[in-house]
Image (cartoon, rainbow, N blue to C red; front, side, top):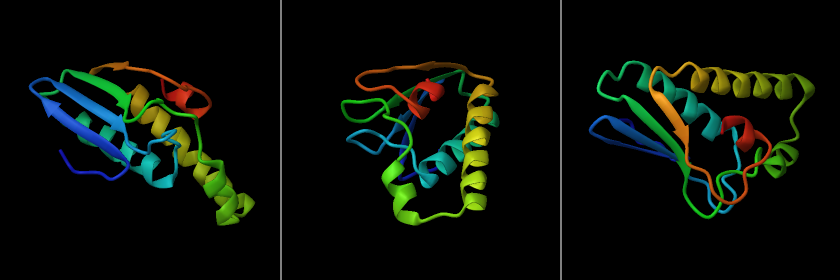
Length: 117
């Protein structure tokens, strides 16, 4: 599978493990959302993979969206709507995976992290 920066994807036989990779709190940002969408599209065409485990690096699954990054970016209302649509696309991609998918959770799981779980 393709190498990503914000998620780690490993394939072992018929099991794919996808781990959020923004410790300390694994906060979602634009790049992580985009990488999850890309990984889901890749999994759609992976006939070998039968199971997906969604987990996270570090002590916490996810505390949600990276609000500090949003505040720092000074985005407009239109940009905010586009970002929201990307989040919806990520959720649709996860929901539509053909593989049996489970979330291995620990620590903080709230906001967008809870929605993903």
